[in-house]
Length: 216
Image (cartoon, rainbow, N blue to C red):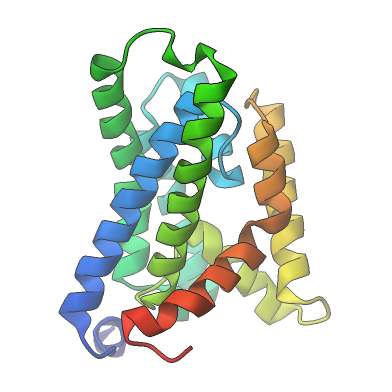
C-alpha cells in the first residue's frame, strides 16, 4: 500500500500537474454540458451514463460516480498502474461539473435557443474542440486515467494480438450499442467519437505535451 501511495506522487511538478488535471476534468464537464444542449450526441461513455441516469431518475454526477466506483474495482484488480489523482478527479468531477453547468445554463439561456440548427452547429464545434483538448491534457498530465479509459488499456495489455486503437474503437462501439439499448440518444457526434476519439486525442496530445513541460 505504501508503494502504491508513493506511486501516486512520483511525478515531477506534482502540484502543478494536480491543478492542471482538476481544471482539465472540470473543463470536460463544461464542454459536455454544451454538447448535451446541442443534442447531437456526446462521447460514448457520457451517452451511456446519461441514459442510465435518466432511467434511474438520478443526476448524471451521482450515477457516474457510482458507475466509476464499479469499474474502479476492475482497475484495482488488473490495472493499478493506471490509478492516480487524475483518475479520482475524473471519477467524481466530470459528472458533477456537467450537472452544475447544465443547471447554470437552464437558468440563464433563453428557451428555444437551440431550436436553430445554425446555433447548434456554432456551439457544437468549439464545445467539441474544447472537450478533446481537455481530455488530451488530462491524459498527458499522467496522473492516472479514468476507469472507463483504463479498461481497454487493461484488455490490450492482456491480449496484444490487436493494436490498442482497434481495441479502443471496438470498446467504444460496444458501449454505444449498450447505450442505445438503454434508450440513449445516439447522435452523429457519438458515432464519430466512437471511431475517432482515441486517435484524435493522441494527435492533439502530441502537440500539447511540450506546453505541459513533457516530452513530445
